[in-house]
Length: 353
Image 1: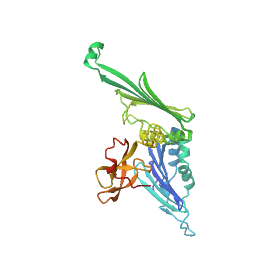
Image 2: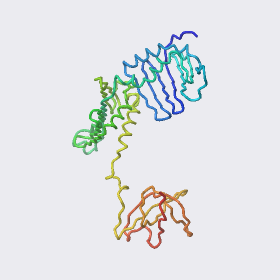
Image 3: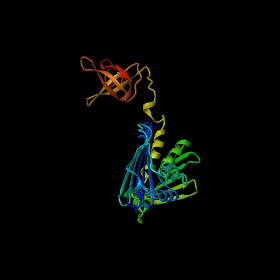
Image 4: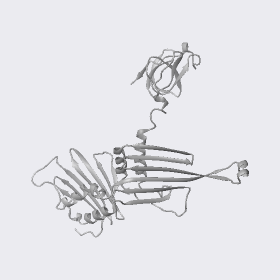
């Protein structure tokens, strides 16, 4: 085989056996190393190399002469049905593709190759670990003033400056989200969960560069400051639009949203979670949407615990045929103000748990 003069562009590597498979995809583009790891169809994790680590990885991986690897490796002395199997696909910058497969047998350069790929997660993140992340969004909003006020003040527009800030700190184990709508209107939420903060920053890992830059300032602008454990600080500024945000912005947003959504707004403001307790002059009516129909029907609820969304069985028609539906709404009425007379309304049969 001729010696390849081009460099490695992609590596797709899979190894495992009866207990499960680990897949690693490595993409080298413009000397930037992007890695995706996936173990036995679990959620794949994606991260990028630090500057120092990617140079080392690119140099070492290109020392391996994949062009000499055989198409298939099998044990010479005996046939092994289980054990360990592996598959490899290497694509070079000239689109040359090399494929190799092994069943409990390996090429001479296996130890060097496997050491690089198996340790790729540690190799690429050990130099830079994201410790702090601060994202600030500033927006100037222009509001047209009513004509009568224009005459009194001598201005046509009022400018409002809004600011949002998200701060995530591994050392304190906190995330702080603050919003300022004006000098006398702002709010602030603070979350303390060291394990959760570690998970957010680990999933984000590295902050990628933005795709484009613009000299023209738009109404909404952001600043992102990432601080790493080795003291490195990366700052990105730009207009708040898709092309000027970091390339892995979706990963950043999803990691933060997943964390925040877990806590929701608590129980105090959720009316549906307040236990229903009736006075002697009150009754509870359920609006039930029957399966396969477009309308809702009122039923009286007596001596049973129900919630919006529960699947229920109700009587329908002259013969009171039992049909299933779900509760779309619950309303407490005074017995003098019910939408349907108590002597003419059917009762809920049962709730299906």
